[in-house]
Amino acid sequence: MNPLGLTMMIDPGLPTGAFTDVVHSHGEHIDLVKFGWGTALVTRDLDRKVAVLREASIGFYFGGTLFERYLFGDRLGDFLALVERTGATHIEVSNGTIPLDQHAKADYVRRMARYRPVLSEVGYKDPERSARLTPADWVAAIREDLDAGASLVITETRESGRSGMARPDGHLRDEVLHAVLAAVDTDRLLFEAPTKELQVELIRAVGARVNLGNIAAADVIGVATLRLGLRGDTLLQFAPRIASVA
Image (cartoon, rainbow, N blue to C red):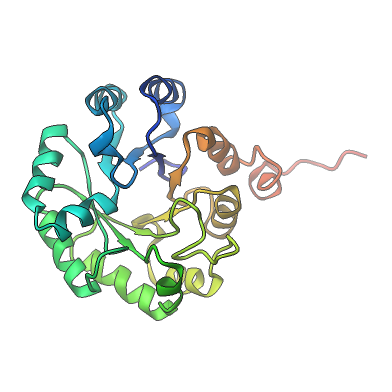
């Protein structure tokens, strides 16, 4: 595992040239790439992007929404065929949108783990549904997914950073975060943090080793500097202590 924690970059449909440049320039700071929601199905150059990732030894997978779309359409076999054809290194299993309860989702985690390491997701796309999940609900769901065979559990905040474990104002639900941190090994968690506010809050709360996801291509270097105390938001927490200058 990366000594500074995993960084998962989201590709929302970047032009192939821009995607290639980011991977070539900043690939050492990227551990995983997620092709967001269903973008993979309308990306003409998907195979070229995959080749770039393979050359850089960076894993990739498709957003949980695509898994849900195939599952809801009773086409799970077609989804697995896509995984095999592209060589996706992981599978994300989620129930953020479709009517799939937690126990049934955990069963799909168990099934998909036969094919690839599974990243399961806890939390909903709808802020109101997520708000009804208590801290105990979060902990129970994460534990159930890990017990079912998930390699990592993703905590939902969406691409906006305003749902799931995040409040509508863009800040973390502290009571949920504290309950999860008290109950689960953070090495088994991948926190979605698409905004600087969430990135800073999580790095301050968990440390530089926190696993962060949904990082935009333009923010990959910024996140690396936050982890290293090279930005004002985390400098005092991580920079080596030096004598005060008079």
